[in-house]
Length: 235
Image (cartoon, rainbow, N blue to C red; front, side, top):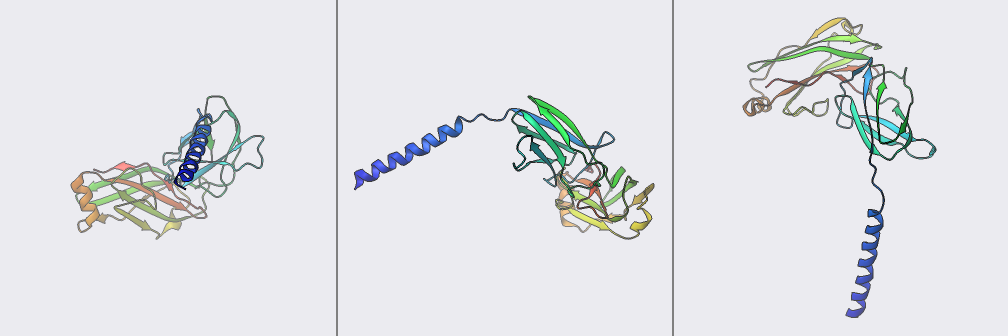
């Protein structure tokens, strides 16, 4: 019986080894598609954290599921893939931009390709300022209306890392929703209420560690996501 078990174990081991060898014999992709999500040549500041996804289809495989291409918070993306002909599109209802102007980008990949994905955002956050005054934080930005019809809320985000978005903020997220109608047409500077963090434990811990970052977010009406400012280092 023991001899039989040893023989069976040997055959199982050989099957595993051979299967591994067959997998190792497959070629690994070595080509890259990189790019940016832009408006008039300007990379958008986005959620990151796999919040914005583009879809990449390979030509000739209409029934093939698309490859998901994740966009980082600076509007940049990169995917390692095999050479071939591809179509890159923005995912419907998946980003702080309108459905107008969405276009298919055709890519004939042979080693490397760099592309810009042009979109029409509802709003832009311009001239963002976040300043630290002792335990107080002041913030403001210019509202730039591109194609928006309203603003649901604006947010001030604080964290100890540069990766900040509406659901990733380990110090604070402060929302303001009052008087949004005054800013929906753009052309105005929005000023946040001054925040006093003298009694805020996470804020005080961040100050002691010497690492604090801030970011502003504007959530357009009808959008599934916010548009952001660049990350600003406060300490």
